[in-house]
Image 1 (cartoon, rainbow, N blue to C red):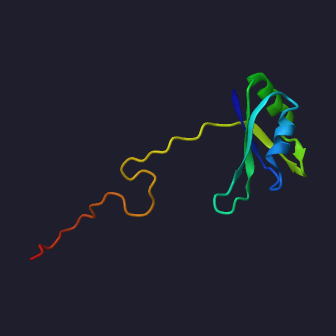
Image 2: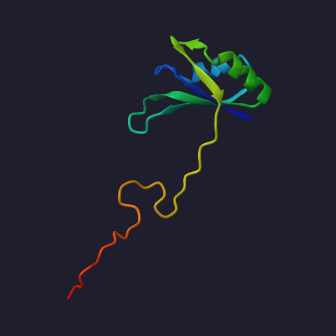
Image 3: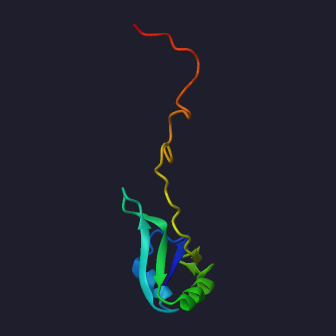
Amino acid sequence: MKNIFVGNLDFHATEESLRSLFERYGVVNSARIMTDRETGRSRGFAFVEMANEGEADQAINALNGYTLDGRALNVNEARPKPERSFGAGAGRGGGRPGGNRGGRREPRF
């Protein structure tokens, strides 16, 4: 099983047309165009999952740079999603590092 990244998609491309394109090279398990959570519009990239690695490699080689709807596709093996760390302060913006700003504090009465 191989997961394939497909970038530079036309925003009007459909999952059916993407599946059809990749089925020329073998069995397609799924074709998912990524959409914006708020608007539901295409984000311009997709993931295609193919059952046979040899067929997937053939599709990658044939379709990388292929022009679909006037756009040259960027097709390669999908990299695993990086692990997100949720430890103390990890991945959180804002605030200052360290917590203790130093200096002397006056006692409160």
